[in-house]
Image (cartoon, rainbow, N blue to C red; front, side):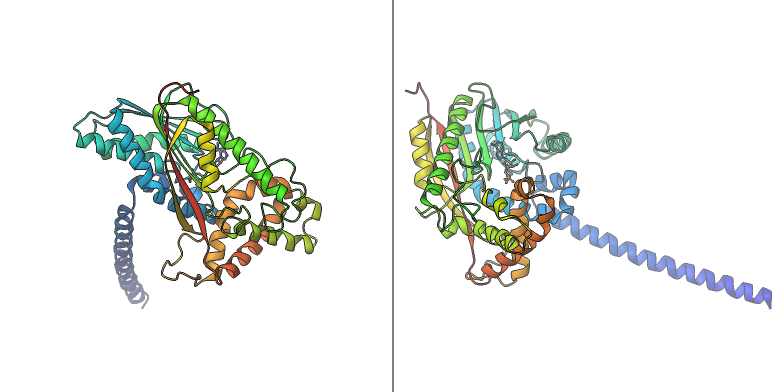
Length: 418
Ligand SMILES: C[S@@+](CC[C@H](N)C(=O)[O-])C[C@H]1O[C@@H](n2cnc3c(N)ncnc32)[C@H](O)[C@@H]1O
């Protein structure tokens, strides 16, 4: 009996093992199919973006905050792409330079960091091929404030260059990438050393909160209830910063060199118009709710204002003209939905207020979190952005909102300036 049982047990065991193997085979096949599908989907995307994401994106992908900002900034970069590529191709065709020095100002650290740079390099490389020219040498300088995570960017550089070489062949480059920590409201590079400056979604950040706006109580940016002196102080700070930006770049860019900057702006002449202020008004509303619940001191809110400004076309072009070193080639306006991934078929409101509210809140959180933590402390953040995401969702089911953006293309004037 015992032998028979043992034998039956062994047979059953073998049967189970065989079934196990079959199941494993099916699972492996299924996994292989999934990997193949995923690979195909990834291939369909921009290759450089994929590599950058894989390289140092995993950590970033884990946090939904970064997902929000990535999608938002990526949409902005892709909308500005034709202008950026148009300017660099034009510059290449005018100079046929053997060496291109390209700087990206406010590069940040994440999967978008090398995206615009790779698009610029792509444009030059495909143009030089059409002419049958040798590849120019590329010198890329990535700038951001000193607190930016340059180490993470640097770790991705060898792979980035290797990929470019694989994509474009051995004749590509060479390409050298370096970092330059510092504020773009001041000198960053040697005299006349840069051919092309790019900056996306960075130059609307001011060097500081405007002075003399203590009376902007209960608001965190220009609002309908702000005294006129607040509008004036913000405009003054923008003018002074943007002039400093242009002064510095005018020393650094070679005559005939180009600059393409994308910033948030506004169509209206009124700086307190909803199109540029409401996104911040909803955040102020969440902060006020927390004041009324005793979670934030009123005085703390009264002393907080955001260091950014959405200028009008007129304000931008007046500053460029007054500073005088650059010719304004083009100032295009484009809109991006607050929720960049939102279904564009519905023009009037979003379908899913929870999802859209969350996505917008993630994007705004990524840009403002460090300022808010510095001022209010870490402990309010989760609660604040939960309230903010609800406020945004409630607003978006009534009205679809968009960021107004400017892409500003400039050429450094040739010859001696007065
Ligand atoms: C919203 S991120 C944009 C990042 C990236 N350019 C993109 O389009 O995805 C703005 C970046 O500008 C940087 N920034 C803000 N003020 C700056 C300044 N004065 N000088 C240099 N970088 C600055 C910030 O540190 C931040 O990394």
